[in-house]
Length: 327
Image (cartoon, rainbow, N blue to C red; front, side, top):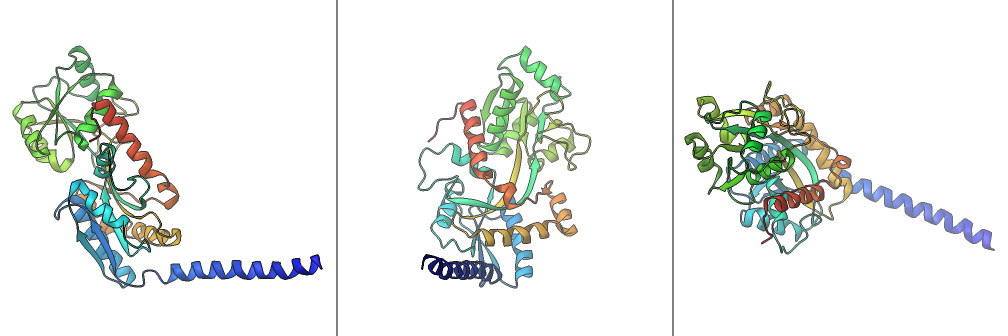
């Protein structure tokens, strides 16, 4: 009798397993079954807005569904993010974000959601190193010389930022820590005033994007001496990385990506990820990102596993080094 019961139960288990697999496959194949909303939790006109709209247009072509960019700015991206965490996690609502998100999350004492676990990375879109620029009056012509100068004159070199807790602040704090030097942080009310202060000689150093510094570098009013990526970048041929030029292990790159509510099914994450990676491989997209001083950054779901949690922890370390208290 026990043998017969086993023989009856086993086919039933196999049938149930088969049904589960077929349902999962069918769920993936039917996605997306309606229009997709791409929430951009920042104002229109910024880099993430531009990139999200460019990718959304191509996704719409590939899927035969509208992919609608929806700007929901506020609280440094947290209002739009919270909205996504409260929506149906079936993959029809996606979230465009930047490296500003983990930076902000790292210095917020209280949020109505867990910033590292309430959303999950679905795909990365692009990345870009930052430029390390100095005023022409600074005698350092390289990162190595800048580090040597900073060691000779502790706390005398001033680096500007867009404000406390921003990417420029964090990148400068991590640079100083990795180099073993002390520099003084001067916050401004945006990156444009900080770059203007650098060009006028009011401060000595700014670490910022090509978009922020490019015009001043081209005009000769500031001097770029390095980039912040770990490896050399095709975006800046011939410009050494800080890692190569005297600050081993230092890396700070801006990135842009697509996220979703944490409970989004894995098979649907895989569908979006594959579609985005295919788009990023298009020659016209590479040309588009080249014009933005960024490079496509395709990554798989396996590579993205734990990515956001690690980024938030990295920024918390930077905040501690910079003396930024959670607020």
